Amino acid sequence: MPDWVPAGLPAAPGVYQFEADGGTALYVGKSVNLRRRVRGYFYGSGPRSERTAEMLALARRVEWRATGSDLEARLDEARRIVATRPVYNRALRNRARGWYLEIDWRDPFPRLRVVRAPRGGGARRFGPYRGRKAPERIARLLEHAFRLRSCGGRVIPDPAASPCLAHGVGLCTAPCIGAVGLSAYRTQVEAAARWLADPRYAIDLRASLATARDEASGGLAFERAGELQRRIDRLDALEEERATLERPWVERSWMIALPHARPGRSVLIAMVRGRVLPAREVDWEEDDAEVIADICYAARVAELRAPSVLEPSELVPSLIVSGWLMDGAPGGIVLDLDRFSDAEVVSRLAEAPPMRE
Ligand code: SF4
Image (cartoon, rainbow, N blue to C red; front, side):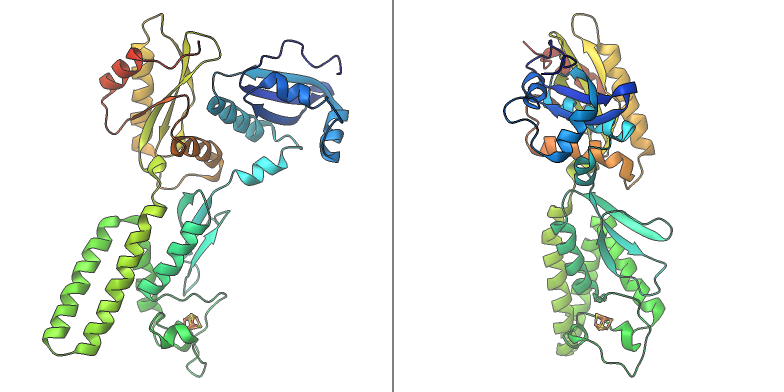
């Protein structure tokens, strides 16, 4: 055990940072047991990978901070990694990104793509989503419901070309052969984008298709009525999948209270429409109503300014907190800021604050 490993590491959650001479951050990690984790680097047969051995050979210091909860440790770890970019943290940087559905309007005949790093410029993004599967499933269903192309590459309409099977079974209006014009095709894509952005649009669209189907049926245009019914069925299938895309952590605002590393204190974190605001600490022995009211006020202001899509740099803390919420918020208290007034938040937290023993 090198003499620069601190002897006083607690057996508690926290963040540690291996540093080289001069304080350059080499690796940032977190653990629910700081003492065991950091000392584990030097026990037994030693570091498990060449990369870790290389990092330890360069390390001359361990900086650490105890936290009262695993969530706070994970947020601090992510913040440090983004701020210092340690060379040995490559894996976490890659893992902590989300997925987006993207429509690139610079393409004359745009299609839906599921991407990691959204492009700037004329691309419209929806997300972020935690996994890739749900947005991919929705993209396929949207293509079918709005008869968009699923083929890759650029489309140059050529009436002499042969469309693929999707056109034959009514799932694509076939811009590839000019069966649909540029403006009509872009209207289809706009409708798909509206479906993603506005759940009420799906209700109106379904109602208008149902009316058109009934009129067609009443006018004995059964083929047309059948085609409209198939579109309604596809919209229904799509609607059933909407729940998999819903991101309650991004659609709503939350006040999160966690135990602090020091007994008798708590850490308060607001997450507003997916954006994690800076943490504040409260000491319940004093009157902290003002601090909590301040955090609520900051959250309300942030809500007014919240953009519809989070920036990639905001994703890491957002995904960490959302994962924690979806796991049932272990060890903390969560209040929905859309449901409770500021005064109720203050009184509920003051009545039963989460604290370490
Ligand atoms: S019909 Fe044409 S545009 Fe549509 S998916 Fe097939 S190849 Fe692409």
